Image 1: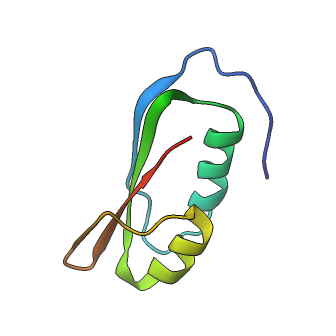
Image 2: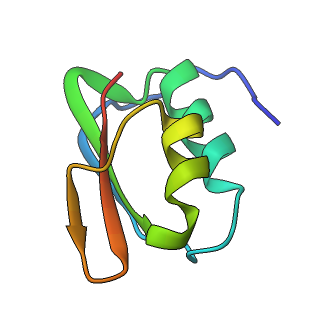
Length: 78
């Protein structure tokens, strides 16, 4: 569920290492972007499993910027 709020503070960097096979991370990222939690030049960095790569690319709209073993790292901007 996407909830519209005005953040009291904006962030340069948000790091996320959610459980690999949980899909609620997609809603979390949408909420962070819709509610402008990032500064204009900020970013979200998320670590995910290579096994969820296809769904992650579809939902995040970006390819991983780094693959380490079975982990993919995504850089998401506002």
